[in-house]
Each structure stands twice: as C-alpha cells, then as structure tokens.
Length: 234
Image 1 (cartoon, rainbow, N blue to C red):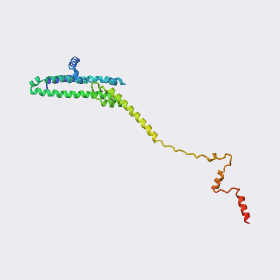
Image 2 (cartoon, helix red, strand yellow):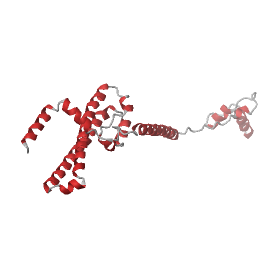
Image 3 (cartoon, rainbow, N blue to C red):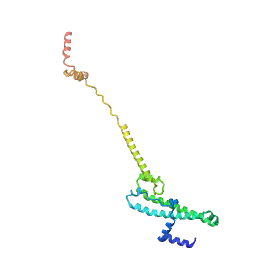
Image 4 (cartoon, rainbow, N blue to C red):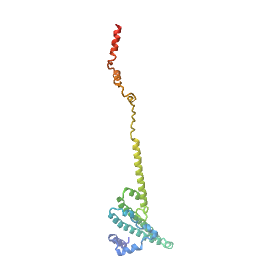
C-alpha cells in the first residue's frame, strides 16, 4: 500500500470530499449518452404523485444522488480502462501494468454491483407504500431510465383491468352456483272437489257414508225394515 494514497483516502472516507473538489469531478465524468444506464433511474412520476407522504420522495432524492455518484465513478473507471486497452498502449504495457489493468476491472465490477444494490435499496423503501397490485407489477418490470420501468403505468392498468374482470367472473359464477343449489319446491296437485259438480241444493251424504264405513251404528231408517222381517217369520 502507498502510504500517501492511504492517508488521502482515509480523509475522504471519514470527512468526504469538499464541494469545490467533488462537484468538478462529478461534472467531468458524468456519463455520456452511450453510458446513460450508469445514471440513477428517475422516480416514476405516476408513483410520486400518488404518495401520501412526501418523506418517501425526499428520501429517494438523496439515495438517487448516491447512486448517481457511484455511476459517475464507474464512468471514470471506464475511461481509464478504455485508454489502457488501446492497441498501441496495450502493446507497450509491461506485465505488471497489465496486471494493474485487471485489478481496475475488478474494482469496476464491485462498483457496478454497488450501483445495482443502491437501485434495490431505493425500490425497497418505496414498495411498502404501494398496494398489492402495484407491488406485483413492480416486481416483474426491470429498471431502465425509470426506477420502476417506463412501462409501469401501462402494465399496472393492464393488471387492474385483469383483476376487475376476474372479480366480476367470480361474482357471476357464485350467483350461478347459488341458483343451482337452491332446493326444488314440490308442486302441490290440488284435486278438485266433486261437490262443485253436484247440485248445490242436494243434501250432503258424505258424513253418513263416512260413519257407516267406520263401523258406526246403522241409521234409524233400516230398523223398521228388520222389524218387519221378524214378524213375517212368525
């Protein structure tokens, strides 16, 4: 380790770069259009406007600046590696210098991984504020220039429509099943009364015939008939 470099980095790590040193470096190595993927994705406007609390948006602004700075560091390393890998310079490099190029490339990989995890951290702080449908939609969309993808709004509308259709379908199937499961009421067959076809003035004989069938005593009209029969035998 170079003691001078180690001492400088200790100061930068513990105290940070002074603005008069940091700001010019950030402008100098700002990613060009070809490396636009090294810029921190923007917070989707449709989500930002729907947040109930402004603190989530403010917190993401700070995290976005951190991610931007990691991307700028990657861009600076890219320029360094691109210079060292020019054919003329590469042929002139000593074996030790070529080994140093490999180390710089490994450093760039670590920074790129940090850039990715800063993206995950930003999403993780926003996702809990979303409803379940928005959460599921966000998980399936990779980031681009927007934190939740430029197609997030379109995909969310599509998912909302599908969820509503599925809900309506479930309601319709429940109504059908309830109708099928309803018990069938037995139909009552009413036997028309014969009294309506008979003469309404005729005396009703139903009660008399009913008592005769049940074994009740015979009517008084048959008693004289039996008495006359006994007198003839004598």
